[in-house]
Amino acid sequence: MAPLHAVVVSFPAQGHVNPLMNFAELLGMRGFFITFVTTEWMDERLLKAASKDAAARDRDVAERGLQFRFLSIPDGLPPEHGRTADLGGLLLATQKLGAVLEGVLTKENRSVPPITCIVSDSFLACTAQVAANLGVPRVIFWTCCTAYSIAQTNANFLLSQGYIPVKEDDLKSRDKLITCLPGKIPPVRPTDIVSFYREQHVNEEIYGAFLHESRFQNVGDYVLVNTFEELEGGKEAQLGLSINGCPALAIGPVSLPNFLEGRNSMYSIWKEDKTCLQWLDSQEKGSVLYVSFGSIAVKSEKQLHELALGLEATGYPFLWALRFDIVEGKSVELPEGFRERTRDRALLVSWTHQLQVLSHPSVGGFLTHSGWNSTLEAISLGVPMIGWPYFSDQFINCRFSKDIWKVGLDFEGVDADEYKLVTKEEVKKTMRYMMEGFISKEIRENVSILKEAATKAVTEGGSSYVNFNRFVEDMQNMSK
Ligand code: UDX
Image (cartoon, rainbow, N blue to C red):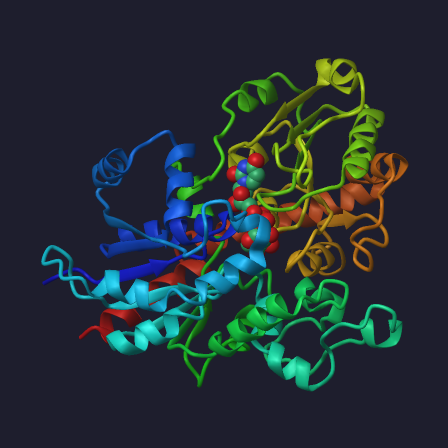
């Protein structure tokens, strides 16, 4: 019998490719034939960062016993377009990719089994029509937390109720709790939901693009979320994403089983610096601050300087993943003499293998932009955080980390005004709270409980493990 064939389609951004590739590998290990689709731009970046060509990558997956084929499609944008630096433009471009995607999937290829399902990133509205035309189930995969996913799916409803666009100056409506969303999730505030719906960000085109996505996040046959039940409201929370009663299951953290079993399944668009682990080996247990803002967030030059001076003032050793494009439109310049003054206790690199870093015993805390992958990775590996959200779903991740899961801190006022300058004194003070004293003890205890719960969830008999098996069985039954 031909193996089941899942077509996994990822939105072309780091925070999406990583969880979808990890998920695809897990399916591959269960005997699925996988077609992994992303854009040509993304595929080239992934290959370049891994210093591989496509043939070497194909050999690698085959040696691991996986049946994979990688397809890449043009995104229709000019070469000079910033892609993830202009996320709105990129989202608009992906909304027009249905015909191209369908074209590559229907091109006759006798060595490929018939398609069982399309596993679509939740931010790829175009796959709804493709799945319908091919007559296969559309599985919606959320790379964000459940509460955010529910809010985004219901964006048009929130618009009709006047919650969005979020009125920045009207404190009463801005902070009003939204209790009318489905699913057992903690109440969210308008400022928690995607930042593109905040007045200060509203750009008609981007705003429209997110509302358009929302209409198709409710068109599908199965829903999967990269989270785990013990973190987000048990089974009932995910049910808020169910479409006409279809299963909606938490199956994450999807990167954890691969990592725990020693498979190097991180897919980066930046080249990883290999020196950090040796450097971490030379540091004391729990002493190092790890600083990283994911793949998209940017900071002003003034802010970067305050941060650098704050890190210097803490006196702790620190590992800083400092992308060269962190300051929009400018190269990175740090305060004069900073590198020399901190040389004996700091390592600055452009990109790390974040799971390896977070699992290293020397790492004692994480200053993060609160991207969902970073948040989930820190929780899974038991590292307390300071959240410093930049955009999108990062505000809700940061607030939940601080107020609901109590595994992190934040800089005061950033949730209301992300352009607020965080001073070096605030950086120093908050770092201290995270690294030592009563608050530190409390958040460390909480995060280690959740670490254990995450590990349990993905191991045999655990909630995500069971849900993943159910998904595999349901796909087997649907294909009969
Ligand atoms: C984006 C959004 O910001 C995020 O909120 C959304 O949920 C998914 O898309 P990004 O900003 O890149 O992603 O952040 P994040 O979700 O944290 O993903 C970054 C990924 O890159 C993580 O898996 C992290 O482990 C990895 N990473 C980051 C590295 O491997 N090395 C680094 O140095 C930094």
